[in-house]
Image (cartoon, rainbow, N blue to C red):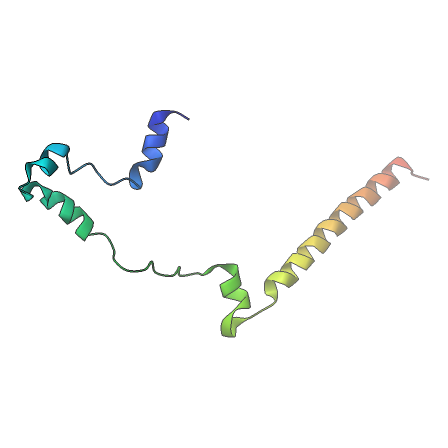
Length: 98
């Protein structure tokens, strides 16, 4: 990967360079206002739980428990297998017509 691509991807993770070494070593602390302002706007506490919670939370946990994903998967595999078998059957009759 190119360094610029990596820098662009990590741009959201790395805070902006507000505190420079000259400001930090001056000892006044007055130049740290922008840095304190930046970090004071960040959310505090634990991360909120995701709204959807995923498939397990939606279908298998709690009062809305359902076997719909399992049944859908079984039907989808059956449908795919039936389609492939039917196509192979048609090819067999096409090549071996009586």
